[in-house]
Image (cartoon, rainbow, N blue to C red; front, side):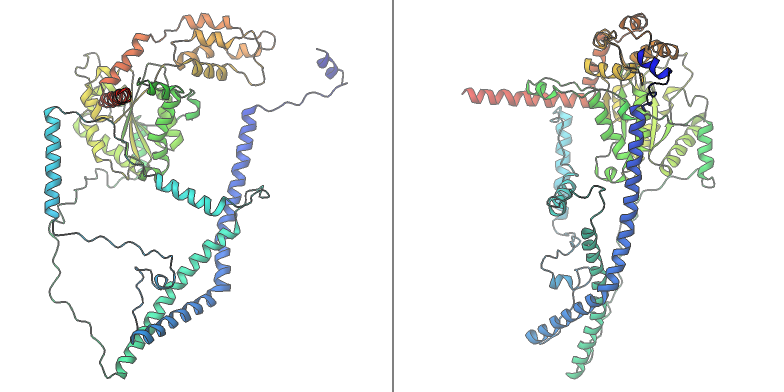
Amino acid sequence: MREEEMVFIGMAPPPRPSPPPQQRLAEVESARREVQARHEQQYQEALVTVKEELRRLQAVQMREDMQDQIRAWMVKEWEDHGEFPDLPKEEEGGSAAIFDPDFVPPPKPAKEEKKGKGKKDKKDKNKKKEGKKKKKKGDEDEGFIMQPSKFVPAIIEACNEYNEHWKHKDEKNNFEQNFDSEIVRKDKLHELETEVRKDVDEVMRDELERLKEALERDRGKKGRKKKKKKGKKKRKKGGKKGKKKKGKDLTPDRSLESLVEELVENNVMKLIPEKRMADFMGYPALTGSLQRLKHEEARPQLGDVRRVLTEYCVMPMGCPAVHETAPLVKSVLIAGPPGSGKKHLVHAICAESGAVLFDLTAASIAGRYPGKAGLTMLMHLVNKVGRLLQPAVIWIDRAERTFVKKVPKTDKTEPKRLKKELPKFLKALTPLDRLVLVGTSESPWDADQKALGQAYHRVVLLPALDYASRLQLLTRTVAVPGVPRHPSLDLSTLTKLTDGFTAGHCLDMVQQVVTEKRIVKLRKRPLKTAEFIPVLSTLQPVMREQQQMYYTWLTKTPLGKKRARMLEAEAEEATKKKAAVRR
């Protein structure tokens, strides 16, 4: 009050309004982006100017040196063998293969072995048949088998590049993080040398041919004439069998704008809210390794869900290089109780990867594109527009309804319309298509599990919020910018009271209590824990029995069965090792 009085009578300057941390963070990020863009522009300009400078100063001398070097090699070969040698072809590396000891020629295409090929194919077919027979007899597979990662060679190459160029480089005075002109000069010098060598090789091949012709004339021999191969080339049989017939384009005369307009009008394409994966708050399971040592099933937490969906959907969809290298994931099923954040994750996948969203939920397309012809046109439009605007996400809410055995008579949305179309759609996807099918479900056990497992290749289960995740969520949502939290608000107690509630319940509770009117009164009357209890009592939590139903369902899925077999195999190996140690 005394400080306010001093400001009022003009004896003290008014306090400067400090910007909120989020605004300051956005300003710093935008400034960093501007600096990065400016440095990128300078780097791209340097790539052109440095190469032109090197071409102007060193190209002529470089060409003369290469010609003298090749001529000296030709004379030496003439003196040693009495004949002029042939200059290696461009595919074999050209003259670089002669003078550069570290040159590695490009690999030659492997020739198909005619002999023994049929035997190998027969052996492979017999092995496949034996494997199928074993599966039919009831022998189960071993479970999960980790495939070698395709990213390891790229990581090793990046580490080697760092050790070679950057590890011992002093960057203390490079505060602005500008590009290194020495590295640019070396790279451009190598490119210029490669270009000049190609031109020099062409000139020297002509010169070499003229020398050979002159030598043959001196010896009284006629130049050799190339014999034409008699006979026609045999055409490969079975060339047309390998090609697949492309599907007919049902809309060949329509533009992309008209197709998008039609899908938007029919509520199939929707605007994506600005959601982020970072807003899906939660910590990973930190005790999972200890549970694995005890041969117990380690249940993932929300942080693990965020990481898995980033690896399955966001990174492959947003980066074409990752999509080409990473294992192909065509469909993902996200299961969890109401309010656990399934829709938020779908929107976050689209926003983070820059994908367009197609909503094929039964309620959204009810009454639209009726009949078999209409359904064919709908899937054609989704396929065509999705491939033209890829990356794209095809979302189906309440995905279990597509594969239910019996549809209630009161349900007029025809949820089983896409039952036969989804397998066809997934089968048509290729590694070049950045499209993914994402389904969300609140009661996945209602569906036919075999059909559901064939449509969705990956299953992600949203677990219950643990104490740390609930505390993080409440700390961020209750905080008001510019108003410090009063000690009367005990978030630890409130976090314990919200045990069993989902993230949606916690957000609803905070929104009902921390309203605009309540924010105005915060300075005079701070928040208390008791204000949240009446609102919390009106919400229905997720019981432990209901949460256990999700885990029970997960163990019955194909992925859950494989995981159970893997854990059993690990437990058996551990018991065998313990028995061997005791002996």
